[in-house]
Figure 1: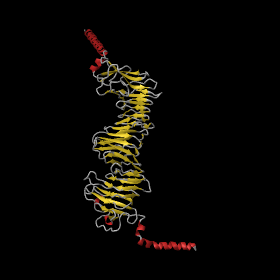
Figure 2: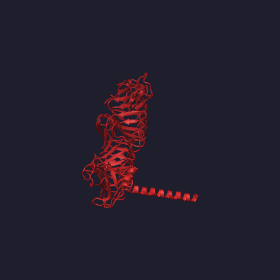
Figure 3: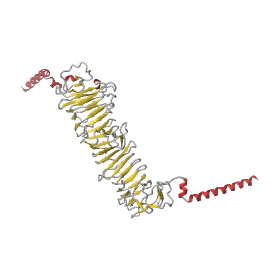
Figure 4: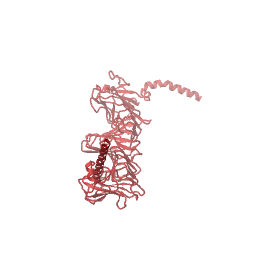
Length: 568
């Protein structure tokens, strides 16, 4: 009996389905949604059916839609915006006046780069929830340099899958004013996804997921005021040939500061700009980029800066996870990396690459300086290796650099002496190597002393430029400067010892009389390398020359006499 009732009920539902479809067409359609192509004029509203054509790749000419607009039947629709429908060099605004609209995907398409429009501006103050993909394959008109599409309503990322795909083609540029939600986003296609936001608040303020890219696309974040803080709880991760581009968009004063308070993960060398991290300054003389979130290097990373004038400074007041990798710069416009006062990154081991000046005023782990890199500051490193082409410039106008561990120098050591006094860390720069059982090896190093502000020290003054607290003698000497060698900087002559100071193991420079001959074996800092100078400072050379000339004349005389005898 029960079985027959179930069969009858099932048959009744099947018979009723067509009737329900006729009476309530939106219910049956809601599961699949529809594709709506924008046909509206500039600033026309979303919630007007005649502004939309039903279907994809359809012409707006002769559009007969009178009922369907986004969400009109309760479905999650696909919205298509075709640049072919926008007049040349125009930015069309499509006004979203639908409260809390949910769509399955958004697509920008069409355009030929010349006679069609240069973008859509999706305006309105509403929230758009995106459950699926975002695609921008449009080719904006080249008539306006800033061509691209702009989405002003907040896009809430709430897809069930992870991540959502933002596919932006090479010729396209999409600006998202505000993104929130927690679903991860992958940017791909080779174009630019701009999460700049408005003011300095940033378009990712309420976003908590991860935005990543690896295929040559660009993730761009721009601050459009003079200074400010860009904050997000989300993470930006670029790898492969993709680029993270940070832009100081409207900085027109002498110096602007931008704070980036969100985690960043970097690897790869970028595409086109040859950098994983690119810093744009536009019109400012100096741009300061301060990273307060955690920065993680997953490979050797190149950073480039492109201000019109001046330098770009990168300051890290949050943790830096070097992971044994290096920061380098792509151009000769030096990028500075500053570890701020009292910051403790002792678990991190910085590797400083080409065109990077790393100023450490805190504490870092074992540090390596490679060719073209410079390490300076009043901080502490738990071990320091300066490779060939690298520079250690201890202190910072002036100050002392401390090394707790082994110190190996194969590059240049460049202390500055700038005051009449002889107090280290106050009147001149010094390196302190302070760990017991540590070591100092100068075998491959070059000394380059700098006298600043026209300072000429007096004869007899001593400058302890390396304070050796290890308890062991120094291994090796600077190139061309053996124990007791005399070299010249400007008009000042110094004698060097590796056995000075209270420990008997310090490197100390003593100012000697201007009449003291230079005795360094190779060209020392400030020492002329002409033949006249060598003769002037090495009295033995004229004597040797006279002996050689006399010997030569004697040999010639003997050979001539022998020739005459044999001829007879």
